Length: 497
Image (cartoon, rainbow, N blue to C red; front, side):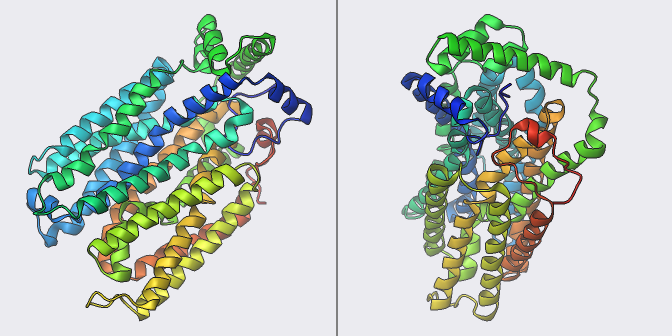
């Protein structure tokens, strides 16, 4: 039986050639277009995540923002930390709100509601209230919608997209995320040239968050509700209409797929019968939950997300502050987008999960530790000049982020979606997602203080984290590429590799 909650990446090798050939013959052009449309609409949530992550670091460097919210350099570090931390806290809470809401009301309308919640927070952020407390509260409200959306988007996609296309379409989330970051960095750089530093200098980048949020909410209205969710609710006719729509076909083959979905849901219902949360903390189930929790924590501990939020502050340590740091941050965003695009188009379905994650951590560790050594011995000149060693460190950071987008950036999310059997899949993925936001909060809240007090030592901290991650990944991660969910479920996760 084909499991419809298959992994987002690397699953094209799971089926024998005859199945692949059958799919190629059956798949319609309309079905392929609709699948890519669905993936693009849903992954506006990834674009929103990226834009919101990237925009705040640049805005907080603008003199107009500091003037309007009436704080000086003595409060700058705390303001940076709270501006990001309140959003992360809201997103962490939003992960747990998403589960019951989408379970009851469906994937489609849940995303509409979460997008509206984000927009309400963004509107308040863009108003010149002169109150940091109001700004922080609005960041938290936006975080609720953002965090909840990051749970529903991959769930909706995996339940609708044909298994044979999930590898590529599932990678859209990370690609759109990098495009959102890229857009935010260049917008921040552009508004830094505005004369007389008016309030709209910071209001424009903040207010533009409304565009991807609105595109997500409106775009979702063009989609059918999740076939699998409808089938679980016993709405068989609507489920059939949804599947026929996304496949662009109502032939016998699609009818057989619908019956397969119903059989799968019945089997899952039997598998979940009598489920209790305490099962998550026993034996092999606990090993899988711990693996998901640690993988998402490791993704944040690489330092890449902290760079996304506070790129200008990091580059100021290398070459000094001002527009030069903003420009380098904008180029940093372009490197992220290009490297992720190459991964999605050419490599997503070809590389070993385990080898890429281990190797990626090793290269990132080398980049960060080398950068720390160079900055320690050759800090950025106070006269604003750029040395050859400064150029070297910038190149190392660009290499670091490129490797991240070939490894821990795109692979962590699909990996945690693959490792759970049906009985514990939903709570397991929810715990993994909450771990991402929890450690996102911890590391982004602490980053301004690390940059302020450790300076070059910040790069050393990330480098040591990356080294530890590489060792642990080598010792404990299981390979999942090319395996069915049933085969992965039968692996012993409580045993070392």
